[in-house]
Amino acid sequence: MQRSGRVSEAVIRRLPKYYRYLKDMEKSGVQRISSKELSKRMGLTASQIRQDFNCFGGFGQQGYGYHVSDLCNEIRKILGLHKNYNVIIVGAGNVGQALSNYSGFTREGFNITAMFDANPRLIGMSIRGVPIYDIETMPEYIANNDIRIGVISTPGDQAQTIANQMVAGGIKSIWNFAPIDVKVPEDVAVENVHLSDSLYILSYKMNDLERQES
Amino acid sequence: MQRSGRVSEAVIRRLPKYYRYLKDMEKSGVQRISSKELSKRMGLTASQIRQDFNCFGGFGQQGYGYHVSDLCNEIRKILGLHKNYNVIIVGAGNVGQALSNYSGFTREGFNITAMFDANPRLIGMSIRGVPIYDIETMPEYIANNDIRIGVISTPGDQAQTIANQMVAGGIKSIWNFAPIDVKVPEDVAVENVHLSDSLYILSYKMNDLERQES
Image 1 (cartoon, each protein chain N blue to C red):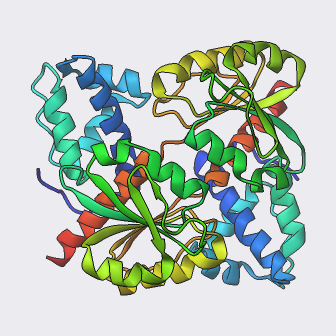
Image 2 (image 1 turned 30 degrees about the horizontal axis):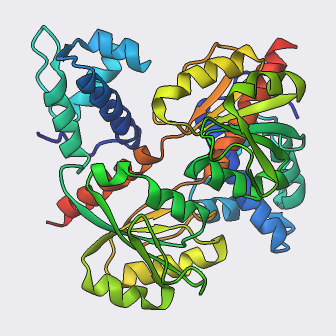
């Protein structure tokens, strides 16, 4: 797989969708697919798909379409999903628990090894085999357990402090669910997930459709 | 507030972020803010912000900046957050329960009135006062309770059927957390939330930063 320069954020954001659709097709036994058929299923244009794939050297479509499982594997590698990562979750409330309960992460190589919380009622419990430890012990735990990804599911006012501690401990990748945008140094990757943003966009769209009808 | 034609998806997707930052500033007592200062806080350019606001008629910055709470109210109205909406959640598993537990939705006018599930162990329970009903009774419930938004947090293989039932019942707005893209008619708004997409993008970025360093 070759890279032709920096890949744009928009292309990167479409990669997981390609991966999802290809995995589904692989599961249903589809062996080959043309870019036209793939574009129909995904709601993108065929030329868009070809352009996206060209950012990674093309994946050699040979007149009769892409080989689904090869393409799926290529995209898996580009996303880094062929490796394993140790993950901790800080904040063992509803969101943290829902994330630790989701078996799909383990399937893709994300192993949640521990959760952390400040609440004495939660410390010492475990969820699906994942222990909840005292938040005070997090820096030491990071230092000793090759943790690659830190998930933050605390209230907003604690999120930046937790992020700073994670970065100080050497974590290079933060998945943040707290309702603020956490700031990290340039050599650290961060994804801020704001669920309510998506609800507000839905509200906008619903009202926009009503305006068009009236 | 005036609209100058159709607003692009990219602008719409930035609106909740403006709203978040403005609400925080309002809470901290900030009364006025220049587009320069706002751009610094949000990591956007000042001209980007002015262009975005021009899509909605401008919000009259008068040389000395925007009035924070006025601007916040305008964006609240544009997003439709000045109204109330009845919401149901279908699928009372981890994600459904985490969503029903989140008090922020109620504060912005989204009232979760009921959850639905097929699991007899869950039916009859309630979570933070929200009752869990038998999924079989959903169509009747929708018909009688002015439900505006349907949340889907079921496994993927049930999501499209649930979406179809919601649409048949007159729901015009679907917030989908199941790991497939649900399809809806053109007059229905949908937001497909794929949490693992965001994790995969994080994985890509982390690996990309490592490649740059090596």
